[in-house]
Length: 473
Image 1 (spheres, helix red, strand yellow):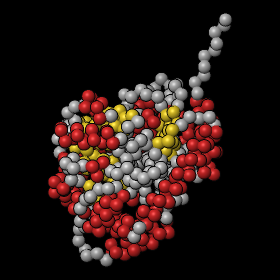
Image 2 (tube, one colour):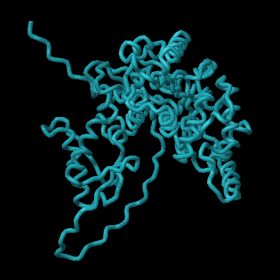
Image 3 (cartoon, rainbow, N blue to C red):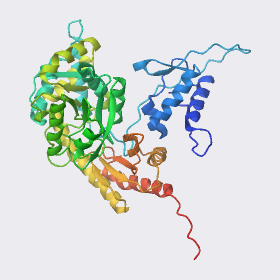
Image 4 (cartoon, rainbow, N blue to C red):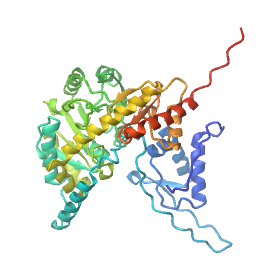
């Protein structure tokens, strides 16, 4: 979306928020700020930007589609429709080209992105150069849709060392990001029309991908031990799949307990169900050694292990992988062959070298130390301001008092240069639990932690509900 488009939500107005969003985008289309063919943000991205529910954005897009102002094109997203050329009474004035969009540097408290100043840019640049030359020298032909053999072998070796998973490279499939890796698994499992357990709160993109493949998400609560398996069986006893984050629950950070791991594996075996283990942080745990992957305990071939390099190397790579049980590998290979799911070979060659030559493990050790220091400094800053909080993996959870809208507070924080995540964004829409803010630690150096906490505390004070006046005695 063009940078000169501003959508301002007036929550005090009588006009519904859905209508305000549709009107703002419609005006931008009519006056030419949004050209035909321009791609609108996804429901999730615009909802996060505006601090509203995804369903609100979806309803606004549906209204624009009904007005024939936009068209939907499946995976290609929602785009501005071609408009009739209006009669002109004066010569057309050519609009200057908009400057190219640039990715902004991560803001303090932003969740889900590695530290901007922690990444080994020089080492990675040299590796990328060699990988580009290697890719250019390859025979002219189609690359392996399952992923480059060298990278698949390197991933299998890494998982055996770091996550306790004994797997063969033929079980490893490389994909363009987490959604594509999950999509590979869902296509192979053929679960259209079935139900899947998802954590609540949990990763919203996983729910979105399930819906795209015809699988109905069934929210299951989490507690101090992780996913409540008994609650899952009570709420959706006929589920065919569970999507979980056992290593560090997203977003609350707890590890799935040993008892719950056994219960989940027993449930899958008894009900002929599947488990997708989203191991998004791998062994990047700030205290102690990471618990072995759930797939390491799987003896009956019910767990599909999904990993990604977005949180540990860079989200710009768009490289993830899925490790499947041996019996499922042929079906996933057929899906990969039909979808050409793997990223460009040059990127794969670079990650292979990064893994093979030990750079990745050294980078993880460095991140653990730096992020641990940053989390400690952030917690100290919150304690100094008298704000209760809880560690949540690579984030810190700041519970909010009753009456404070976490999404509205997150929007005000973004306007002030901070980027916390509202806990309500991670919950199902029907959930009414107390809100909170997730404060990512990766991009808050200790020298900036106190100032960032003070700024956030000021915004929180301004958002506190005004107590009613005391009654006269």
